[in-house]
Image (cartoon, rainbow, N blue to C red; front, top):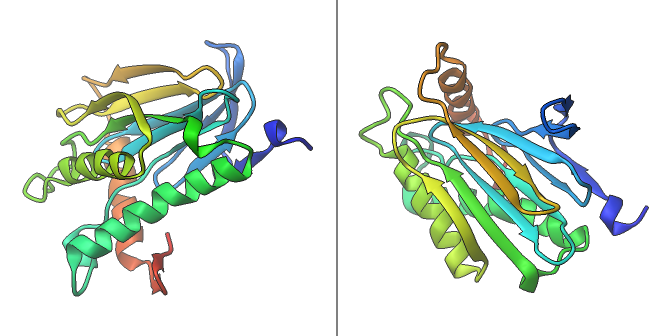
Length: 203
């Protein structure tokens, strides 16, 4: 199996997207996916953020979907713990990109999400904290930022084609059910109950 065929399957949600006539993977909170194949990675974001990162030369790319833990789930130093958690979520995917044959000097990123959609979480500015974190992380790691669609009050559906870097973003202005909110609240509960082992938090 060549590097370009390699996939890191941390998201089992595969399907065939008839609209784009291509294999697709749906990324849920806490998941990521890396591939060298011509396919589409899809996620729906509320307060969470997704980083879409690719090697602009080889087309190996991936998407993650994560949220920083809030201060209720952290002892000691909330900012430091949240930063470690966010860095871990980013590094998991970036390390997998490099293992799959991507080169760090060729990486480019697009970031999405951080909407203020979780009722009861407005005081904590969850979306804003997630947005600021991912932008700071990319800046500190010298990864070129090609595009961003962050903050606002709407959930988003993101389609990312790592092979070409093409991205489609749809703002979900009339969501008739609470699926997105429920999914993110369940994710927050998982983060709060996850253990810390060594220098990484498991989720």
